[in-house]
Length: 290
Picture 1 (cartoon, rainbow, N blue to C red):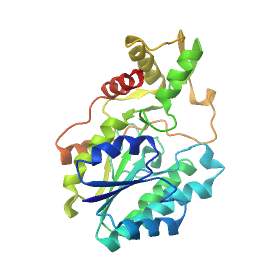
Picture 2: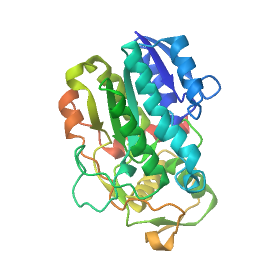
Picture 3: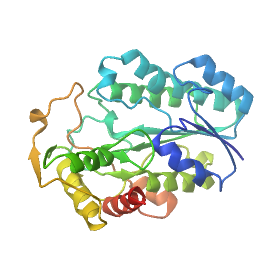
């Protein structure tokens, strides 16, 4: 099987690339050879590579910056996935596409199901929903996986890396405590994606959700990061983590207050339940210290 992995520079793709090798030949491409903001670049790469499977781990992920760059966010997150899906339909290939909790508004009190109504709050979420809809419009040969609160060892940065950096520099850190979700380690997410590949058959096409299990606030997550980092000897200066409200930390983009996604559907498909988020955090930190 020939697998095209798009967005190879990102934290999820860096985790995915070695894992996907067990499923076939992996052609990992970054924006120099497949620019998701340019339709012609996508079509050309698909025509040249002719993959059996496309895993789109590429995205415009700067949530706040998207508010001032809506056209770029829409091109990468909204239009490109539809083009990938169209090309997959032509080739008889399958697309695995990564989406987000930001397609929901966070007003619900129970874990979101794949079938729940979407209502994105900001440009980023709207662009990701646009991408989902473009994929569905192109045909059926796809698996969309929504995830949330993703962090890993690769890529440019994430909440865990930011906390570790601030924890070395500051004695006090203020963290939002009224947004809750399920932190998701790229190692576990990548493993789930690779386990889906043998199930890529028409009866399983559609939309799924995957996060680590368990729920916490960003404040709880920060506390856990420092507790686990301290256990393994990570150098920390931080003495106090202060819980604050979303209104005390205004951002250009509104974020969903409740980002918990149900993983019941994907667990039934794979026959396994996602590991707890704290387990993933320990594994990620162990790699950071090495």
